Length: 95
Image (cartoon, rainbow, N blue to C red; front, side):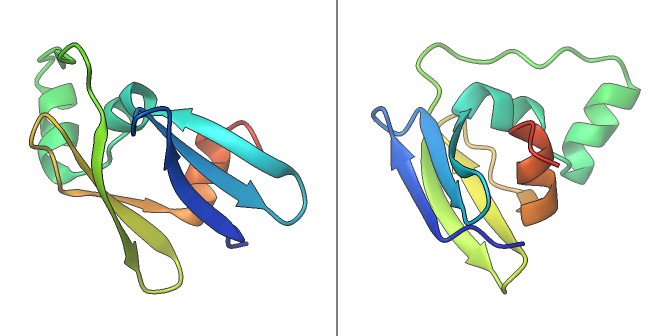
């Protein structure tokens, strides 16, 4: 399922997704950054390297990827994560 609206809120520190069946859910930039499935982030986790989130982290860009996902860029320079709609629903606690 695809959201009907996607927008940045709270000075770009939260992503608001409006779903047709459950309304709007907010995901904090820090939550999204920690949840990145980019290969570099998976490698970091496997190696046991802790992710240090800088103060004031925000989403700097939102790019649709086809009809199935978003690519998010963050103020710390990370821009490789692709977030499928199903994963965003999971992160928001909506299954």
